[in-house]
Image (cartoon, rainbow, N blue to C red; front, side, top):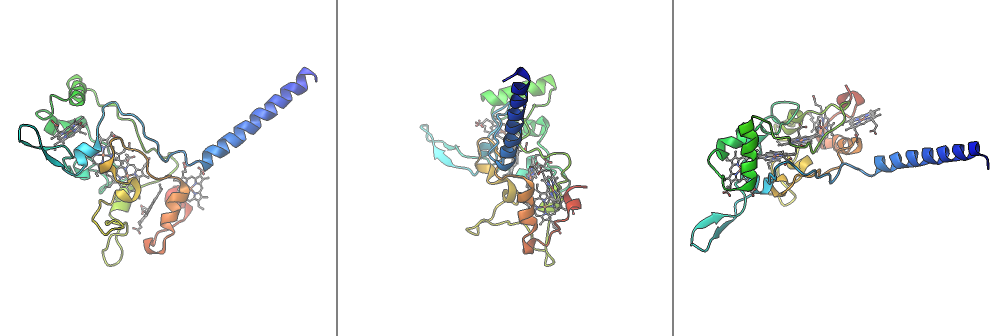
Length: 207
Ligand code: HEC
Ligand code: HEC
Ligand code: HEC
Ligand code: HEC
Ligand code: HEC
């Protein structure tokens, strides 16, 4: 075999790997389960989870569970605009200028605050720019009778936050991870449900 045909074969092989590799990626729902580590261990379980009261050795009642802070206290935007937002450190400092100052991660957060630097939170969900998505249109969606279109109760009929439809039970997560595929098929599967009365035209999501 001469050098040239060898090179052609290697190039052909590389091309096959590239094609099948990218195909496998496209079919693998690569986003689901993505769970990036954050600069500060911010636990939704502790801030947004349900309280669990225990009596410690001194006989005092202590909350070892969560503080049940509502999602919208920190994520103020989902009901008002396209984007939800991750809170600025000022929101955390409403409480943490006085609370939890003996805790490692709270001190680290205060360091950022004292230096005037934002906490470099890593984005968990990040759709490509050619997709148009709007939070308020979803969390406020109502039918003709004024009933919410997205579920606000779980399978057992218990009340849940509307966010759970797409993000799962964030209040039970130590570290936030992506709970659904967040690909086009997933969006369409819900838009196609007759009770959603929602368009599946390309221009709805690609404007
Ligand atoms: C005390 C403030 C606070 C509360 C309350 C809170 N969050 Fe968060 N949330 C954050 C912070 C800070 C981050 C960024 C760090 C991270 O991803 O863990 C975040 C991240 C997220 C993300 C991922 C954002 C991304 O980058 O894609 C989702 C989704 C989310 N929160 C949903 C919720 C839901 C749903 C609730 C209510 C059950 C809630 N949060 C309650 C502060 C809060
Ligand atoms: C409404 C009040 C309130 C707000 C707002 C708040 N926290 Fe907290 N946070 C608490 C309380 C109360 C504790 C428990 C303190 C303790 O255990 O001593 C706590 C504990 C913590 C801890 C350590 C406990 C642990 O193990 O998880 C971290 C880290 C933390 N908060 C980060 C944040 C961040 C980041 C924000 C802003 C996005 C925030 N908090 C906003 C009240 C608040
Ligand atoms: C219909 C599905 C759906 C519902 C319901 C929903 N989200 Fe989201 N959320 C998304 C999608 C899709 C993204 C990614 C947007 C992007 O990357 O452009 C996202 C991103 C986020 C982010 C990251 C910041 C951003 O805007 O990209 C946060 C924080 C968040 N959601 C919080 C919430 C909270 C809190 C609720 C409930 C009040 C909620 N979401 C309800 C689908 C949903
Ligand atoms: C759980 C169901 C559900 C999922 C998942 C979902 N949607 Fe929707 N979507 C709806 C409903 C319900 C409406 C509102 C219908 C109405 O108000 O008429 C809507 C409306 C929209 C609109 C129109 C907003 C406007 O300005 O009128 C866009 C754009 C959209 N969705 C994009 C997306 C994208 C992109 C995804 C995936 C990342 C997605 N949706 C996932 C249920 C869903
Ligand atoms: C309900 C929202 C929604 C509708 C309607 C929709 N798309 Fe998409 N589309 C998406 C999302 C979300 C992605 C990003 C997928 C990803 O990154 O995983 C996407 C990605 C794409 C891509 C990039 C290739 C890919 O698979 O990532 C093309 C091309 C595309 N859409 C074409 C269309 C066409 C053509 C239509 C109409 C027949 C359409 N879309 C309707 C949400 C939608």
